[in-house]
Length: 423
Image 1 (tube, rainbow, N blue to C red):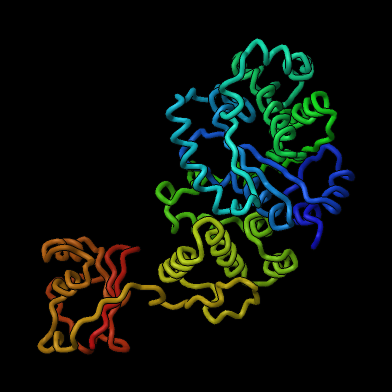
Image 2: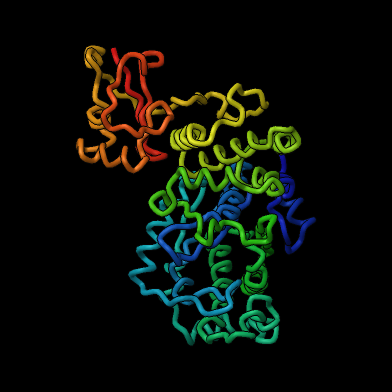
């Protein structure tokens, strides 16, 4: 099996390490335990968290044991990293509820069965700390001068750093020490803005235990236009379906800039990198984006929902490679790409067409509307379609002449669609 260090580097995950040569050698020879922390600041993670989640997944696929650490304790304090102002203070009940939502998302990327990975919560060891004892045992190892030199603190000092936030580095460092002590965790990973906290944790663990541990950071992912990755029209793209519908999640990836395509394929799919480079190099860039959108959606929402989103987007905007000519190992090739692919079907007796079937009644029978009046309003407002053509006449009578292969296609708006088959 290949060294996961090379995998992470090739795919664009690496920004900085505490000892590159030692980490490369370590991951080549041993199976280790590593961790990433996720604070519970909302009831769902967003796609900005996908880089560390995918990195943990790659570590596990290479035989290492990942720890997904929920920051039930550190969220009480608030991480100043990357923020120009203090984070909103949350209540214990809010943090607990948010944590439950996030824990259910970890299992989409990491296999926790049979001790292959651990899911921990730092509230377990942080919330019961005696403050004076903590300062005497842990605080004495920290230099205020060095802490103030950390990038996360320097940025905040310009706008005002609260004393509670100033403690965050100590708590994150203590997390690393506890996991090294109790779970033999020897590597912490995180975003590049976590570098100061990770180094502090490495130093503390060596001082407290004499144990050699390591740190690795991921780059802050920016779009080609210079915007922070994971936003669409100013809104976060969430991993929770109720906050960002699967179709919208798919469309975010489908619409990435050409310049971001290779980066996104490397970070957010499992496709081999030689295939990634081939997809980016071939002429049909929209097919490469379809594959990215499908594969990224499959990772978070599963194959069935990814297939539905792919088919729905194709019906609405067209398929980029309906014949499947672009070579790929993705199982997108097994999914039907046609105007009726995945469309819910309703069957009606062919006898319904004798003498003509009122189009209003057909929309009701297809359960696209609840009443004749609603169907009339839909047609008058220009939201009803028959075989992809807008309906303007609410007195239309459907006959066999409207059928194609014994069926018609009805749409109410752009996304609600039914195929009616007459038998």
